Amino acid sequence: MNDRRDKPADKPAKKGLRPTPDGIEIDLRDPMVAGVLAWLWPGAGHLYQRRYAKGVLFMTCILGTFFFGLVLGEGKVVYAAQFANSRQAYPGIQGKLSRWPFAMQIGVGLPASPAVVQLIFRAPKDRELDAVPPPAILGGLMAPPESRDELNQWNKEMGTRYDLALLYTVIAGLLNWLAIYDAAAGPAFSEPAEEKPPGRKSKDDKDDKDKTKDKP
Image 1: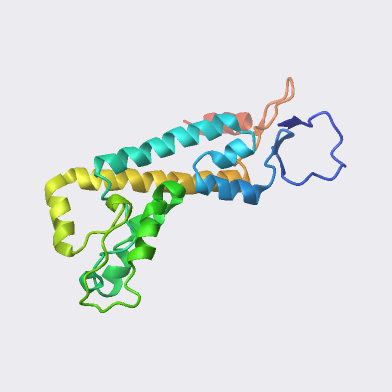
Image 2 (image 1 turned 90 degrees about the vertical axis):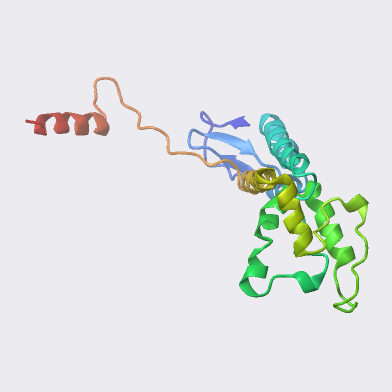
């Protein structure tokens, strides 16, 4: 960070510098690169910007939350496709919304990438609908359930633990989407408080005094 409170403000701002209301500038370096890095690995974008405290905090909290949920759900709560067998897919709007959690989970970037790999290698592009889907790769990590029966079995075996694990991974992804915005756009600042010169009352003090007078 650079302190420009006592320096003239007529110089053009350098690329990547985000001024704060009190005159301190934060060097975001290349915001686009920072945003991409923050998506690929939580906290990496902030480390690139030399915002080390935030980088370590995001990396620890977001990855910790994601992997805790992944382990709690036995690796079965993060997957991209509805089912490995396309005939089992839910029709209509139900099918389109069934995998909304993955839109949040993919926010953690590379840690959720095995689900995308499973989707690509097991997608039913040229095979018949009745054909048996190819076996899962990567040891079945983040592979979708084969059918509705298997998904129901997962829920039966884990009970509420399945829903809790899903919630942890979704929250982790959502938090990293917010962290990505912070890396690309910089921190959000509130307006500075109104300074009160010695011996002079601020507007808030006057309003409070007026309210007191109005009371019976």
